[in-house]
Image 1 (tube, rainbow, N blue to C red):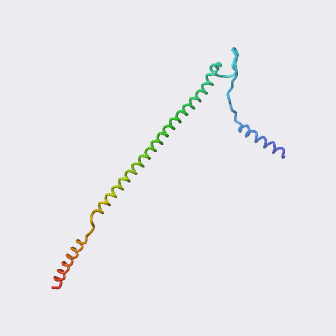
Image 2 (cartoon, rainbow, N blue to C red):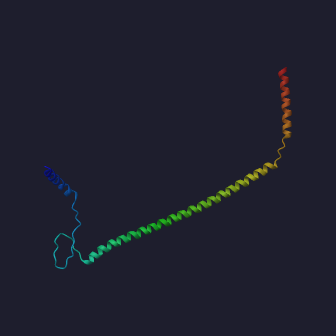
Image 3 (tube, rainbow, N blue to C red):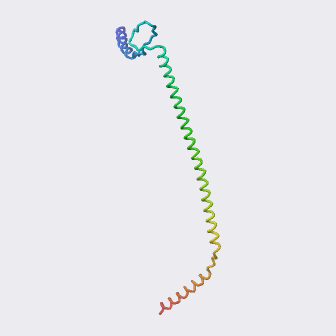
Length: 146
């Protein structure tokens, strides 16, 4: 009985192995000499055409690499220019800030000196205000008590 089960399992596995390995066609090629016939449908070309095809691939790759290098160099120069422009802008903004700060300091000093030149002796005003307040208060009390 085990023998039949083993045979049955082996027969069940055979189709899955056949399906699991797909057939990959890599194409067919052969070197033909003059007068020989091709055994399959194909494009035939001579050694010069073969060399052109192979060199065309190499040439395309080299052109792509050259274009990439040129574009990278252009981008590098563009970014270096932007960095230099930003550095110049930082420098000029720093100078503008320093000049405005210096101008503000000068203005503050001139205002301080102008404020210090004016005498702040207000004793006459205080005395006059006190006298006026006393007179008004006395008149108010007199009218209030009458």
